[in-house]
Image (cartoon, rainbow, N blue to C red):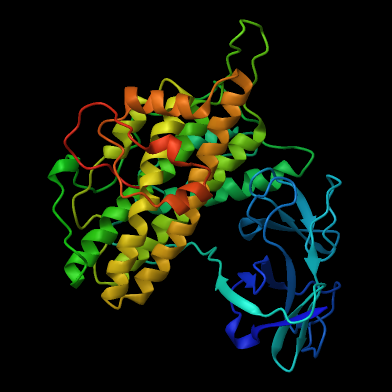
Length: 451
């Protein structure tokens, strides 16, 4: 048995932390409000897994079903216990016992608090130590006191609204603060109802997405006409870089929402001419809602950071280049995933570390923290795209690499150029056979990273 000191209570203020042990094992440490019996007030405690108003739980970082990231689990309370649901397929696990309603079990680890220190007990040979601990951000920063008056009040749909109704409503919402709120609300609502007797209806074919989502108080230019941001060495340059990233993340919200409603009726095509077509499973919609929720978080963090630096979103011109790629792939889900998730977003994996280094060199630690959150999330977004393109190809008996390359050659403009972050791409499921020596349609501009 190893007892691993994770840190002091004063240092563990986030609701979840990613923990890596000296043997490479990865865990998630949850810090959750102590569940008290009705009418009982929490008192400070010594020892055990609790510390007054908070209780700590530890479990394996990967879902035992299919390896989903439990750092992004949705947390609910059932029968006075916390339940963590995997973001990939909604497998649920009691964070204390690891038990699941699906019959599989996650590894959990006892946590004790003593003398102000948090310790995890691991049933391995003695001598294990903490190698690394990092907070996992869940925060969404909502705006307080809008610079421009919102156009109309925030509207929530009724209980009978379908998922597609909600998606079209979000796509037609031009106010960015409302878009953040509605997106995070929809993800929480859908995830919660998935585990209830009345899951949200998909409503495939019942709602039509707009040709292009509207924008509020933004000056649009062509991608090639965007002013150059420079190398991040001064405040003006960093503001320009963050503004450009915020624009990409707002479009990324709409891209994840649009893929849900636009392709809700998608069915796979059997290559042998049989009728063995498959509809998209509900986990497809959950996965892309999770992506949309992440993108709303990213946009909110970048927008807030702009204001902290003395600017605001909308102060500079923006381009709609990502949506142009969406329009070119609006006819086919395979093409949409290939170009948006596995080219644009994968390109973000390549350039993010370089951007982070620029901000680190400028001693802008707050922006570095935000960009690190975005980079880590975007690896999972590329994973989502790779997973669903692979699933479609498995149903259709095709090669996902060839399907990807064929769609890029037809519908992407430009070359898929390096340098590549091969490690992050491999982590997302993309080996070099996907992207080496790959060219789309003739194009002289830069490849837009992100989305």
